[in-house]
Length: 159
Image (cartoon, rainbow, N blue to C red; front, side, top):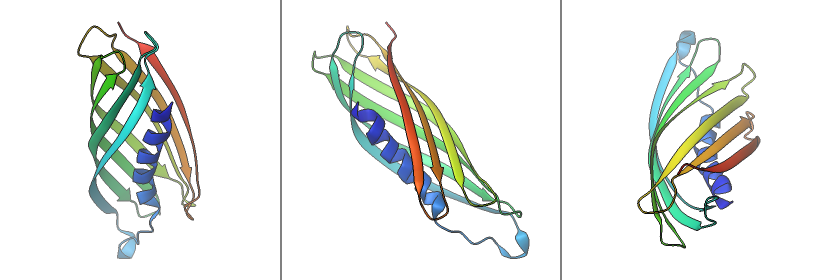
């Protein structure tokens, strides 16, 4: 399904922003940085309830708090507000609204590991069943920018 790859790219671009080297303040002080990023992506998924092909669009904003501690560790928290709409080839429309929270921790050698579990509801605005999209995203990013990721995706009927 196209949604897993497109969403992975969107989240990976936000995560790669942390690979950019940031110098710590003098005297080993804790440094806190914040940023806001807007994102958008199109998607296609199959409704397992009726076989309907749903095309849609997701957009949102992510607020990030990145803390660099005196021992060289990095810890980040991300808060995303997501809104989406979709239309199926059977005429059903879907709306998705969600608040997502993720945490990232970098080890002493600069390797960042991030895992996010997402349950994104798609609410039908007509006779079609509601859907629940389950996503498991995992990324490992090395200091030189090399990344390894995997995505596990499933869609569930919710009546």
